[in-house]
Length: 455
Ligand code: FES
Ligand SMILES: [Fe+2]
Image 1: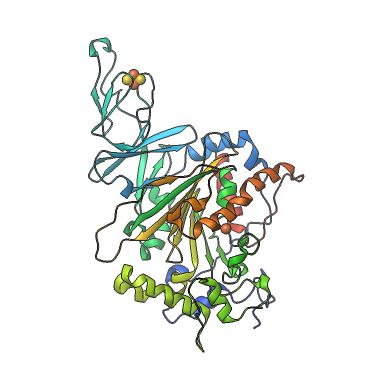
Image 2 (image 1 turned 180 degrees about the vertical axis):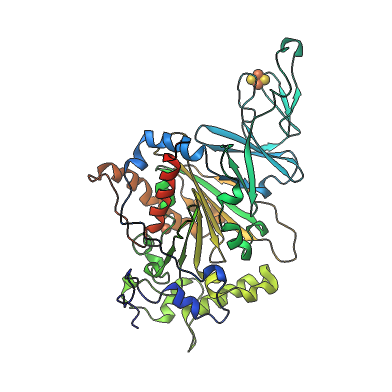
């Protein structure tokens, strides 16, 4: 079948498909990657007011952020008892603290006296002493000290315990939920823990953590990182080795909280018209590698994967042998509702988190983590500290991101332009591709179900 034969697929997707490529791998296919589910969710787009309106942003605060499980931090960011950081979303601020060796709590960051925030930033303490008048709480939220207790005869220890949000843990991530009625994290995550058993996120550590405020709605930023459809026009340098239109987008019927894409590398975008030789595909994937060629009988994918496995060998030890080509080079990305996107495998160790900044629908915070496997047989390295860029800085100022910084700048150039353009979109609704943007449709369905479920 010719590489661009669309006829046999009811959705018209170009061949080879990701499943064709996986079937070519002598190492086999992990069960997690064997399916390619497509749930028909119609052809609708998204109402522009979902990105622009203050009312909608307020609805999201109550209906989404006030109810959903959301990733607050990584466990290794608070390794010792008393270590804490602030997790903030919309109006809420939580102190995420390691209150005992294997206990993490999330206290609402407000003094129960006159409401000053207890902590202005993260750090390490033995107790939380409010800087205003000195009321003090133990790490577990119990009351420790009342200044001038004779003047608070109306105050009981039980009533003056710090209120907490719920905490759940999976894969080295700490999740919080502000809704006491929500189902537990284990249910919320659906199949994600089983899927990630092959690539345990808890065996990874933060090698880099960079954040930057962006002048756009949080969903505009997020949605720019969950499809490969934009590669040819936004990242033209990568179209020669990322098979953008060959990407597989997966939405499972009945699974509300995750979706997936598998974006293959080692073949050129169909938008380039098949003009590249295998050597050109390979060389463009590593422009600084000097002359590299594809031996007879091999493919650029196999050569790229072999090179990646050689790089990974010191880190993974003997486990490197079972790393399939796809796991070595492709973007295999699970999007955990609402705002956490974790790459799976070794294509790149990226995790993204997006959230609104305050109540303004025009601003958000994007964070990029590089979560690297703890080197085989070695102790866990310390987590890299957060590098918070200013909105006017380039991602390339974060040297720890290497070449990714320039790629994120290309993405960022679209974001405010989208936010602005949506105001002039006369139809009031975006148009989404049936297949390549079906994950966006799935996400908005789940979002709407949160906003309209009436709790
Ligand atoms: S506001 Fe915290 S001690 Fe008074
Ligand atoms: Fe991009």
